[in-house]
Length: 561
Ligand SMILES: Nc1nc2c(ncn2[C@@H]2O[C@H](COP(=O)(O)OP(=O)(O)OP(=O)(O)O)[C@@H](O)[C@H]2O)c(=O)[nH]1
Ligand SMILES: [Mg+2]
Image 1 (cartoon, rainbow, N blue to C red):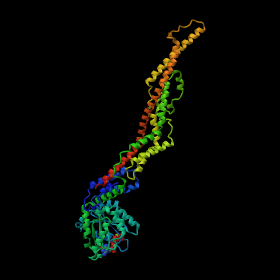
Image 2: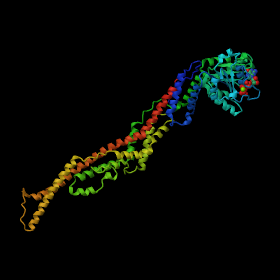
Image 3: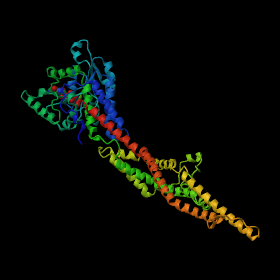
Image 4: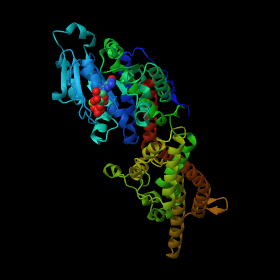
């Protein structure tokens, strides 16, 4: 699986500008990603993305004219000294007791009003906010108008609260100036826990070697080279590295110039957020893959599902009953009239399943609304076959998806499992099984049977009457002859024989037609059951696959610088 966000450029972007609209589009893409995966992926994996969307929205809404720069570093490196030197006022106490600064101090260049909402959000207490706006030096300071400089507590502090405060603020500020000193510039904590973590924020990172006055002119370049090498190892190749002396105004020129450029560009906030989007996208990368997933479950798995659904719905029992019912009903309509009544006494096989009764005897409309049939409940084997078929559908649909998704697909496939039995039952009850109309040939054969039976009855009556007259000594009836056989005898025997013959000829036709009726019913039931499977199993799966595709596209858009 290739990394789709590999296109997030890792190279140092230096002074490359970030377009505000493009950044907002990327943030929208992250938001779209979150909407698409809502409820499908573990929340814990999405926390950074939610935090980013929330923070970025607030930061951009609060002020785009201010640049929030934080001085961060180990205790004693000279953050407060640099803060005061830049402000040219003693605003943040500098001390020999370590650590000195316990709460963040802020200095605002320009009017405080605009910056106050930003500082409220960042969480700097009003009593630690200062304004660098003096009538005397107003012109000198205009280059820094819009700067909000923060003096942070030490991040390597023995005070846990200091570290928490630093970590919180580092997530909110636009630019970080990392202050190191000649003694501790190589400390593991700053490199491993902080600088390395900021490699995606290179374009809003400045490193300052303070207390340069403590080094000889020969030592300074060596230390700077060494520090540059360490920064390269941290992934911070190309970040500005300056030396400063907080206690000497001449040693502040470089840093002040860098601050002025940052403020003039008004880019730090956008670059910071762009770096945040890069970090979030890289973190989410493994949640989506490169292969475009299938639009839905494959045909083999769907066929398997439909077979399992048909089994669980009792389709075989119903089709068997359809065949029997056809024979039963055809027998009752075309059989020898003398035994038809006896046939009718036997219950109709479909009636036993509470499915539509014998021809012409459709259940009344109110009753037909009641869905429940008496089709036998699925056996344990059928239920487990259905479970396996649903699983197979989910597995096949999720084949190409990254590890976080198959679980969501399986849950979706099973999400309406509880509703399936009722839905299947309603479907079976609502399916026209094709036995509603009495075929014309039944009536014709039935009519013929009546006719030949009538002939036999007439013949019998005639003969009985003849015997009776003879027994009573009355004048005998005239028996017309047909060939050698008297007509009444011919009517009786011929009628009986013809009835038996018609019944014998009809029987195989009924059997054949019953099988056809069964096949037709099976086709209809299978189609209806497949529709239930589509609605209750496949559609939820397709929804998740659709969400995945949306999430994947959204993350691609978010990765695009
Ligand atoms: N020689 C020299 N001393 C400095 C310089 N910068 C700071 N110092 C001294 O270093 C000590 C610590 O300075 P602070 O500014 O309090 O250091 P910090 O980084 O704010 O320390 P915490 O508030 O404890 O995190 C003080 O005694 C400063 O006078 C510098 O550039 N040169
Ligand atoms: Mg301090």
